[in-house]
Length: 402
Ligand SMILES: *[C@@H]1O[C@H](CO)[C@@H](O)[C@H](O)[C@H]1NC(C)=O
Ligand SMILES: *[C@@H]1O[C@H](CO)[C@@H](O)[C@H](O)[C@H]1NC(C)=O
Ligand SMILES: *[C@@H]1O[C@H](CO)[C@@H](O)[C@H](O)[C@H]1NC(C)=O
Ligand SMILES: *[C@@H]1O[C@H](CO)[C@@H](O)[C@H](O)[C@H]1NC(C)=O
Ligand SMILES: *[C@@H]1O[C@H](CO)[C@@H](O)[C@H](O)[C@H]1NC(C)=O
Ligand SMILES: *[C@@H]1O[C@H](CO)[C@@H](O)[C@H](O)[C@H]1NC(C)=O
Ligand SMILES: *[C@@H]1O[C@H](CO)[C@@H](O)[C@H](O)[C@H]1NC(C)=O
Ligand SMILES: *[C@@H]1O[C@H](CO)[C@@H](O)[C@H](O)[C@H]1NC(C)=O
Ligand SMILES: *[C@@H]1O[C@H](CO)[C@@H](O)[C@H](O)[C@H]1NC(C)=O
Ligand SMILES: *[C@@H]1O[C@H](CO)[C@@H](O)[C@H](O)[C@H]1NC(C)=O
Ligand SMILES: *[C@@H]1O[C@H](CO)[C@@H](O)[C@H](O)[C@H]1NC(C)=O
Image 1 (cartoon, protein in one colour):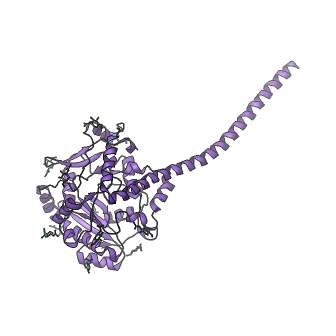
Image 2 (spheres, protein in one colour):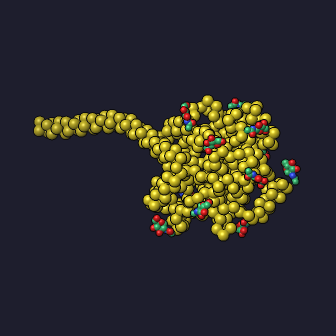
Image 3 (cartoon, protein in one colour):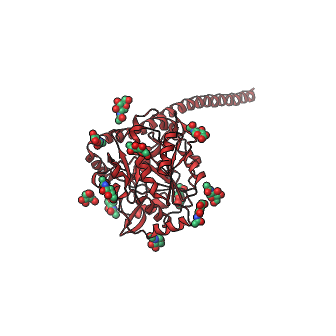
């Protein structure tokens, strides 16, 4: 009897334990289900907040248009509050030994290289098919009478980069194809579009690589004018031992805004350099208008972001940094002039589908720390030191951490 009682007691305890475990498990799954939902929600909010940070920058930027001084103040404040990121890889480790970030105060100040020996060597080797051209440079635009001058100047500007550069415009519009053929620029069909006909960036890279073999491939917005600083920079990077070009490399940089570029000004590299010095304004840290990559850059793994709509530029730089690709800020050696028209510097913000990229990225990744895609977060940068081209490392602020 006593024995039975003892056994019963043990059985009861076991039952109790089982019931407890079941209740615990029930509660656990119920709660975690809810937690998941809440967390999802929080993540979404975080992403939206991230984006609002970017948005608030744009608001600040609007003020910059009328009062450029505020941005410079803002920049120097940002620099003062810089804290260092822990060294997590070779580049950052090198950066921690490197001098502090040397952002140009005054842009227009791309130091030009007057030594053409390297380019001369490239030119003769390219023309005799011993070396690949440096770059396939492509863009895309829609026929727009208000942009005729801008687009004409872009075609006029890109064409003389031959034989170093193969300029390409992706378009299916006969009027644009016509303009390209008059200017001697290749037009290729636009294979993949999204959001009511906007080109998806990665497929332009794929198609450019299918059509041309070059050392680099670049998308640039259709209103950006370059000078020979573009080809000098790329030739020097190829000659540099500091960059492994067989690996994925992404090169970006600040643009310089110049208002009302006239036909005469935009038609010659010397004049472009001159107007960038006399009335150019270095645009913000968060705007990237061109993306130069090596052939091994894994564009197939990149999200299907479209051009000309907010968020894709910072995300691309953030993503490249997160993936530990080599990312280089070429601002100091590469002049990229933005032809600012009456539409202003924030056209992409006002278009239909303005949130297309952000919505797509939130669905894929929940949270996007856009600020880590700022130009100021890029550890490597180009520079001429006593006329010697250098690829250097610098410290970046803590908010850049990925
Ligand atoms: C990043 O790449 C560098 C070399 O390019 C390598 O030394 C480092 O281990 C990589 N870091 C990570 C986190 O993969
Ligand atoms: C870099 O900046 C920090 C603080 O802004 C300063 O303490 C440090 O001395 C600077 N280092 C160099 C090498 O200029
Ligand atoms: C900025 O540009 C002005 C004139 O363009 C020049 O006088 C000045 O030295 C430059 N400042 C710096 C820091 O390079
Ligand atoms: C190419 O690189 C080598 C070694 O890195 C350097 O000595 C040479 O000056 C560079 N050529 C040019 C034209 O800059
Ligand atoms: C180089 O290749 C192109 C096209 O493949 C060809 O048209 C051209 O004649 C070649 N040039 C030389 C010098 O072999
Ligand atoms: C652009 O170029 C085309 C011809 O190439 C010309 O017909 C047109 O007038 C030009 N537009 C402007 C605004 O320069
Ligand atoms: C552009 O034209 C090509 C054929 O030339 C076609 O395959 C492609 O689907 C067209 N693209 C768009 C966006 O209509
Ligand atoms: C590019 O080079 C590869 C081999 O190196 C060749 O198979 C391919 O046909 C070339 N593509 C073009 C467009 O010339
Ligand atoms: C461009 O020039 C026009 C007059 O020619 C002027 O009204 C406009 O304000 C200028 N735009 C900018 C952005 O300077
Ligand atoms: C543009 O450059 C050309 C050639 O260097 C020069 O003749 C012309 O005067 C310049 N025009 C302007 C408006 O700067
Ligand atoms: C944005 O669009 C609105 C209405 O569509 C227009 O009133 C406004 O001027 C536009 N702003 C810019 C910067 O284009």
